[in-house]
Image 1: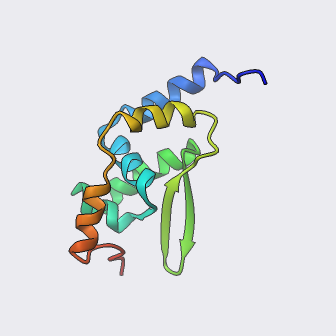
Image 2: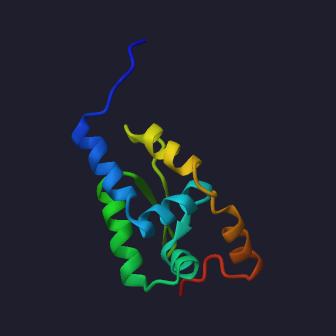
Length: 114
């Protein structure tokens, strides 16, 4: 099977999005487990509107999937994205965020949306 290559423009767009510290952190967390906005607010210490703006950019680029559960929307990494190998390579070079998610869970702060 012939290897599929990304267009330079597509790779540049993904790298630009992943070059932002907040978006990179969001991707670290959703790579471990799906998260809602409220959890990301707690993890990153940013306002809900700021987190939502970053999520919108990642979602518009199709790097994230969203799934509605009741009143909440949960985000997860899109493993079908054409640049997933590039994204995964970057994320694999970082601490995975699992410990922070476990701490959030231990402090009963997972899914605190109201």
